Length: 136
Image (cartoon, rainbow, N blue to C red; front, side, top):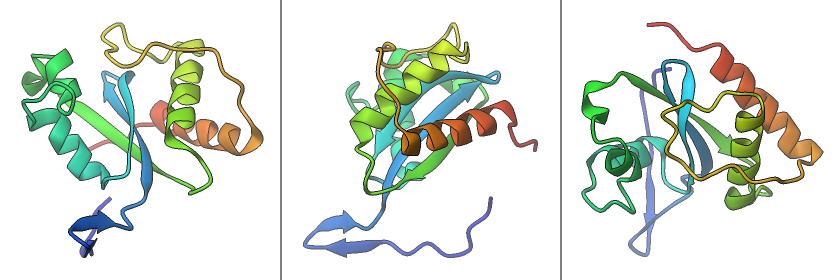
């Protein structure tokens, strides 16, 4: 998926309008991490890989050999009506229930949660995309 133009808006010294995202890290077709962010997914991914603070560079801190692995990160924009923390809990629970969490999973532990219709559609989209990785 190539983008020829990216426009970032900064107002009052803060990045705005970058959206709300859930992103899934894949290693060998299995999920090793699930996160959410208000940053552009590329920025958050870079921070996971390069920030020395383990609270920011979580994937790097939890997977010290990450630099030698081939991984994919798939991000999905969330509607404004979906609160990121609830979405993350539901996605992790679902991916765990259907066996898509890797033995190398380093994210938050699965928790039981209810899933509404809007969230169910998003989870189906994520599950389908994980099951059909892009080649190349």
